[in-house]
Image 1 (cartoon, helix red, strand yellow):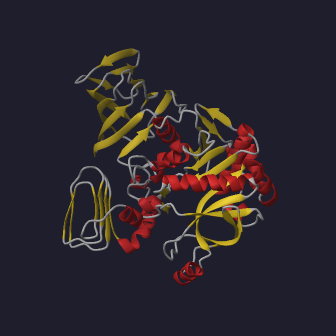
Image 2 (spheres, rainbow, N blue to C red):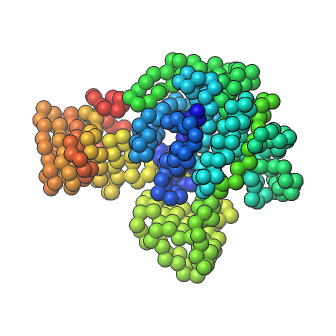
Image 3 (spheres, rainbow, N blue to C red):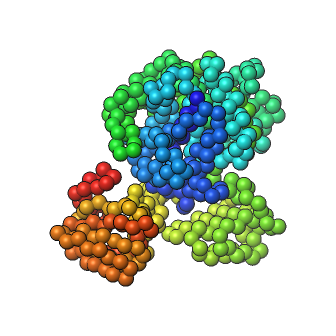
Length: 470
């Protein structure tokens, strides 16, 4: 029995402007037709004895995770909500506690980041099953990626004596400088640390008890005192906050005598920068990778991505990265693309929405996009999914005018209930209780025109909400 456990709490700042705080890279379709989260789940579906996945994420991302799992038919997945980030060791402790409760101490859990790329899914399944066999023998197994270059951005694992289909771990090494990385590669006994692990729930709990008891105690208390919230398990905030912040590598793997590693050669990458997306796709004769509506002249060795149908043109560029979105454009030297996180830091310091939000903001009922904004007015395009509704709410500082573009809307306005179809509209005066409901089987699309002295998203009072946000 194998339980895939996906860690989906990362912020993905190095892939800005596509990856943002409320919609980071694990929820994007960067490679292929599936999001990175969905692709990670799909890789595990062919494993022998696999159970429905467990996803550990933050509160802000819970509805995105739920929707993307439902799109795959994963109705029985467990979604665990962390009240705050505490690194991978507390998350692993929570997962082991839950898996042991639900499936027994001998059940194997496979801990994976939800935002990695693996191009050889069949090869991964074979290696994962070999790792599970080692884990069933009491080893704490990690995947060591066979290195293809002297990479300074990854940690390394030095292999020891052979054990089963893998090796005992001799040492874990931090990210090296270039000279040291070259020495590691030349030695032939170092692998990249992938950050993916396989262990029996009971074995991990025992090792946590020995090496990180405070983390284990906090995790177990957070689970036992947690509460179900719709389809989610919400960990207890106060209990979880008592956990030290540490990675599973430092907390357990570097201390245990049970660590083992299996080599992995399956086209793995942690997608830590735009450089990867410029290499995973086939380049043209000039060495360019062009995605979307792009024209170039005298441009070489450059990655250009247009995301929203807008034409992007480049002239005289070499070794560059250009990423265009609705509300932000990144232009960077390919050699400096890792430094995009410095831009995100500036955005956060200035409290700018581009660090957190996309132009399209996703909600459990659908999405909205601001298409015009000026002094005392704002225009939004709102999409409500079939059979979904917004909260019953009111605003202190703005009035709203709704025009239906597609579908049918049931509108609650004070004591009135109206049914609106395409090309019909209604006015919601300031301070009036209102609600929008899509009773149909197609998306409801409408234009909302707001007017008032303050148009912030925090001017909302919820009286009732299907998603427990009231």
